[in-house]
Image (cartoon, rainbow, N blue to C red; front, side, top):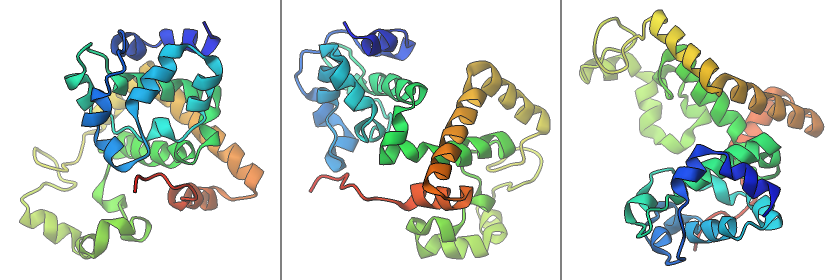
Length: 231
């Protein structure tokens, strides 16, 4: 039994998600990510079940573990009540702990995701905050979003939202005491230390590449040298 497998066993998500895989492939058949990416949750579980450290290490260094959308469709269909999605979460966690995630394109994107999404949650209370979601850096949102960005207050007013205002309603202003509670949850749960680790790893990699923080963010956010998709 390998040391990486032993470390996975310490993760409660692994213990809850792994019972005994019979390699039936139901998880892959139902998986939305498998329809688009070169991704097969059955093979991931099979690799972990082998307890082969070399193969598990390859997984931890791969893009494969970052394709999962954590929708947990796999858990609802598995005849043995396995949850490949939870196993993937444990693999992602171990990959970051070991520093292996910096060896994959999708893994390096955790720098931008952690900084932007978690940073937005801590600052505004929302993982995606309209005023910081810019068309120039998210052109995949389309020209409709470009127009909405230019008319943001009017759009949210027409939608009867409560953008940046006190009281109830969508996108309302989150009171500081509530944001302080969220920060305490991050601190106690390990979220703050994880954010710091990912930022430090990203800045170290930026230094190795001779890039500024902004240049590195742009690189990992837009780089796609690998063919990730099924054809």
